[in-house]
Each structure stands twice: as structure tokens, then as C-alpha cells.
Image (tube, helix red, strand yellow):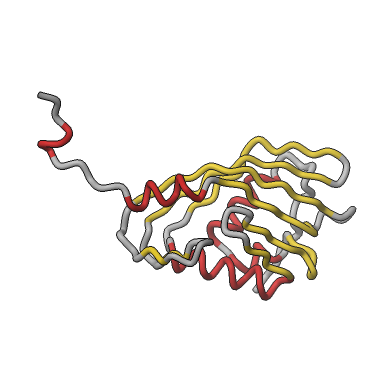
Length: 156
């Protein structure tokens, strides 16, 4: 495992590097976080504290959607805060347990969800907190809506 020096959140290359780490390299992702950093998935009501738990979340994400692509854009920094827009897309190939305890079984459906990441970072650029805000109901709708048959998609 070779962890490269990560760009600082105020650097123009940060969003692309962070996207690549989330999409391609869970070990590299950890290099963006302080050892005691916290990732929070607000929609699912879950906190992941420290590198081991963040890695556990990332493994779950790849089990749910092995072809996940995370694209961060529109970074904005102010003092020790970073805000990023993001799009998460992939195929629903693993089970999903919802916040209310329901479990959705894999359907192979494609999805694309947008959200906002609100982060705090130390002087050295390591994230101490990353909170994702997104609409879980939109994801469930994309994963469960019935396909339109040719007869349903045509108007009389």
C-alpha cells in the first residue's frame, strides 16, 4: 500500500483526487482522513469513526454497488471547512438495509444520486469529519420503481 501525499482541501486538484480515492482505492481514501476522522451518512443515520470503520463503510458501498463511481465537484473552502457537491452512480448488485430496518434485495438497476459533503479538516488537510447529505427516498425510488413495458410507455 503506497499512500501518496494528498492535496490540501483548498487545492484545485482536491476534488478529483478525493473522487479517485472513493471510486478506486479504499486504502488511498484513508489517507485523506485523520486517524480519528469520522464519516457520517446522514441519510442512513450512521457514523463511522476512525480508519477501520471508514474502510468497513467503503467495503459495504462496494458490496452494494461494485461499479460505484463517486464524482466530487464545486469544492468550496472557508477556514477549516470544505463543502463538495457529489454524484454517486453504479448498479444495485448487493443488498441494502435502510434506516428503518427494511432490506432491499439486489436488482442490478442503475442509479445516480446527488448529495452534498460537509467536511472539517485540520491544518495539514486531513479530514476530521465528512458528513454526507442526500435523499435516501430518491435512491429507493430509483432501485424499486417498476420498469415500463412498451405498452405502458405509449400513450393512447
